[in-house]
Image (cartoon, rainbow, N blue to C red; front, side, top):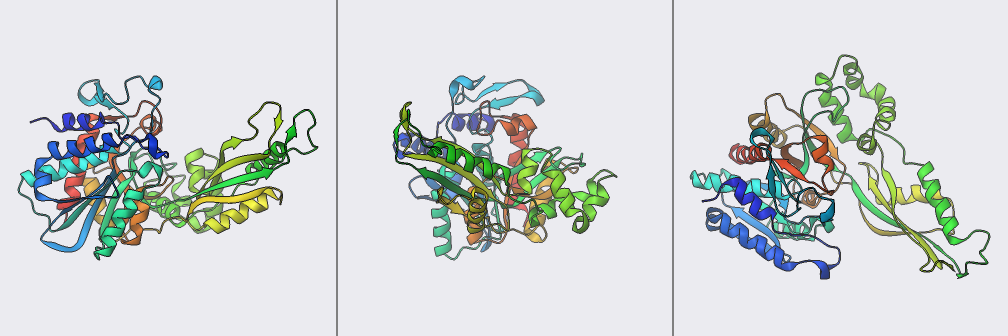
Length: 442
């Protein structure tokens, strides 16, 4: 029988790439991934009930001694596209470099998010081999299109909601074990997302009559659009400490260095100053203290000598807890301050509900962290900056956490959605133990 690492590598080699354009999706790759899971994890597929939802999303139910207070372990099987020429190792070869503690698996999806998915099924397969029956039902929820919106996860939530299933704990991808996430804290921290920012995409459009570029108007559409973009950049959303960020800083205070500890202990007094400082310490910390907005797409004329009839920009906005789609649109209107610039909402979701950073569910995750990832690791609540499938599960659970049980360097985190994604072999194997510990802790 193959080893856990070889099974992981086999599934990493299947290019389950998501595309916004359905015509570009290789459906056969997702079928192959399903087949690979069934072949590589026979005990799981013999013991658990399996459903295919919304085309290729997978929902498994492991019946426990009780169906009350079930656990949901989440991950997604799809990955983002690659530019193979940018990679040092082929993105779907799952090559291993190094030996011992330095061994690394290089592949798209090694962290985001097949690392978690395969660690989960490895944990379940191993527990079944040990004859374990969980105290409560365990659901495995594996989306197939998280990277392009998560319709699979939404459909799974619909199924569970219709059956009256209300999980006591949901764990999805998110933070990891890192160093240096909080200024002044040198201990490794398990960054456990208790909430995530909302998503808003806006189109800024300036219409124009068009015509020949040799006779431009005084304020062409492209210039008016450029002015609007610059005004938005010069008028950022206000800084503040949202509740998940306050929780992170307050929890980190006892572990902070002497100079910073009293500041973190007195957030009511130092909050505005701290928000200002954090906003200047890099993009990640800035994104924790304000709603962010950035132009990601620009379009104008199709011809070099033709005036644009529509100049258009797409703005990607990530909403801080407490802000809403409506409040963000109002801010953009005030910042642009030009009625000739049309503002259209392309899609939008308000920030997720905030899960508790105290109580039984939180302690269950924290115990698994300490038992498998290190007694010195400090579990910290935090605000997840990106979106995940877990946001749909807040509809049916009050305890939704975003945490991948892997110790990652800054370089490894930077490779997500970029080239040279990779994970340490020992790091991944410890992740299996984390999921075992969560399942057994009841």
